[in-house]
Length: 116
Image 1: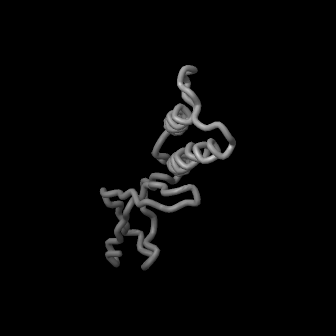
Image 2: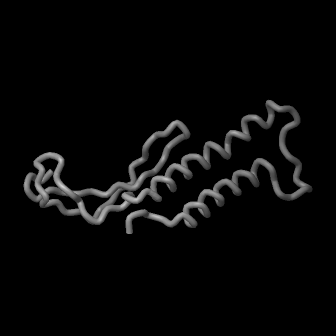
Image 3: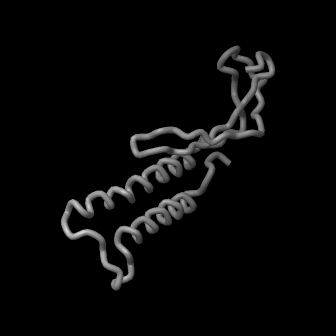
């Protein structure tokens, strides 16, 4: 189980977020007026979908990486021992990208030789 999600799951999540933002900016109902009359009025709201969709895209793209989830911890970077075990706990630290905050998945490992 190398990646954390399938391509279809990633695509569905990204499309769902984009569709929700698109429906806010340009409502699908013809009876609901589109906000703004001049370019400056709708330039700002046009950025909103990008600010919400791009972090989701980055999260999903990271989850599709072949080594997004490892089965074997490898060798200790501190002492070189191969007596490493993966801890059951995982964390989801928030990284800052130029598009906004991105929540990533992080596994933790511990070395039995040096306890680091």
